[in-house]
Image 1 (tube, rainbow, N blue to C red):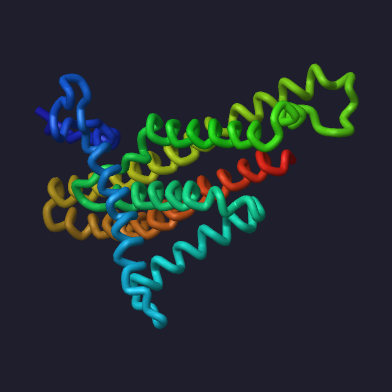
Image 2: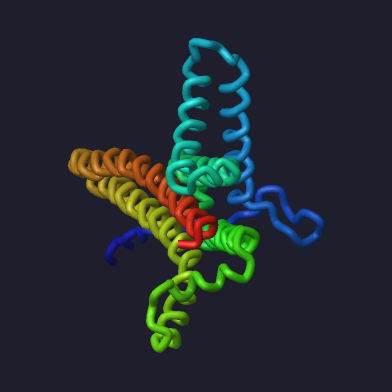
Length: 252
């Protein structure tokens, strides 16, 4: 009778499990919620511990906090303009919340909460609602001229306006799916190659151990690549938020 070949459950890592049990009788506090709390705590700790010394010659943590502050502040000022100062706290929080969520998921026995579309969609919807509120606050009903560019032929309004509205409403879809899909794809690859390594070492003995070096080396390279992707995805989410806020403030 042929030996049963073990299967690879690459998607099992994304299942939610209750950590603290039902809260208030109905709400489950899962490992995803726990990692969100950890990410928020790390962000606060980085700012508090880094800014506390207030030294003229900064240490490592203070330098990290100052560089992080300057990086996001420069992004907001460059993309949005003078009004970007008002939105700096939001963009800063979004960037590091997503970054810590992406990076924490690479630790053993951890969980990547940005790999769930519910989380990334909630962040994206929050951004687009805020952008719309800001646009209405700055421009009132004149905001709706955004969906019909100045100088466009009025005869094309039945075509241009629906296209612009669909384009505007697709923003949260692209924001959420881009982040979610990249995180899922990366972790699935890590799981698959790690499983190959274990299966080869367990099934083929000494030859399998030697053969497992290949998947191991590839997984190490993938970890480095995932760290880069973790930063890039947080950066893309933050800079697109800035671009959308620029459109809302300047209406173009």
